[in-house]
Image (cartoon, rainbow, N blue to C red; front, side):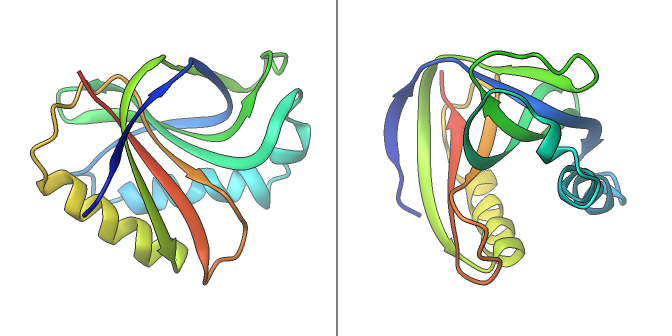
Length: 146
């Protein structure tokens, strides 16, 4: 799977968070529930200072087998005190551009990424959803590198 190395500035993400792990049998329910809260729950409309409408799925705070998942939007300034605020650190990232059905394309891409020998830093990996077309989504996945 092809990727390019990019340098990113720090980003602030505001949204909803939960802790899960790849071995958690309810991982898909946990992550899916966050996306439901963001959109069907109306959270997305309350996020202030959005830089754009791109949805972000952030994986951070890696510890042993667990990590924090945050879904939301990049903002210029965090003003939603009732929501989770996370920082995507500035640094070097492997950027994967994928296209296809949202769930299928993302799951396949992550399956391949986990098998790759990337020099990962585990400081904050994220998906950036560039459109809202469920069947023909354009998504960038960024993997933090050392």
